[in-house]
Image (tube, rainbow, N blue to C red; front, top):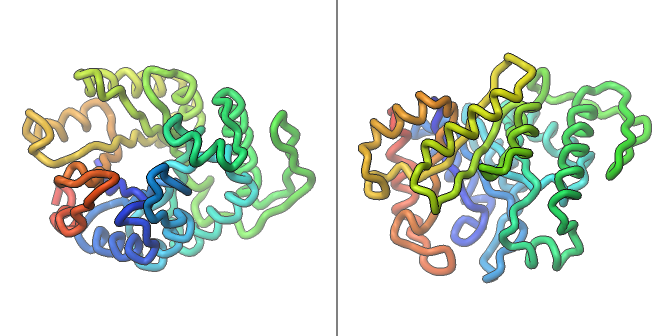
Length: 289
């Protein structure tokens, strides 16, 4: 199982240079991945770093760690622009980039979607996501590509250079269980990022059900990642960490991400961020070290 960090791009972390420095610290401490949220605004008006600029800083600050946006709401971005950015980041990092995608959550609809005239209907966004992923995959091929869909059209176009990674940059698709459509979508790509209902106590049971469902939809026997974010601090759970890690491995989690959220360290989203404590957690390294 790989261990990574799951990091907001706003508040005290709303600084691309700082995010690059934290990624370098994470790499030196033995973490396998560094993944950044993709928000452009928050309702209470904190500083926000552009995720894609921050990812360039991460690429240039590190040499081995995997990284990417987790997740980018593809329906509010031009897929051809994303194709160019992702291929460039893959080259900048010598093939370490991973693309996390989703439709965009319901939270923050006004400040991040409605205020900028973005699509609000989730069914329409799902169509845009599916078509956008097909366009990304086609443009990454480096071959002449055209596409005619309900939401997007691409006339004869050829994008070079191709990404470093083959057959493509890994695509992880996020979804909220028990909604099944996102997991059918994830099964067509390279990984799933399940979010479970925190109001239900059976986290492990929800995760197991989501993983089994997605794997049952798979037509390809190739590598398929299961990415789950949580707090690894012992005070937040009854079970010892070693037992929790064993359970995650047994049900098929391949990437376990530590949530660097202020409330896990005595702070709050709209208040104080205990950055020193969060940096200390990075320096402690992953559970396997």
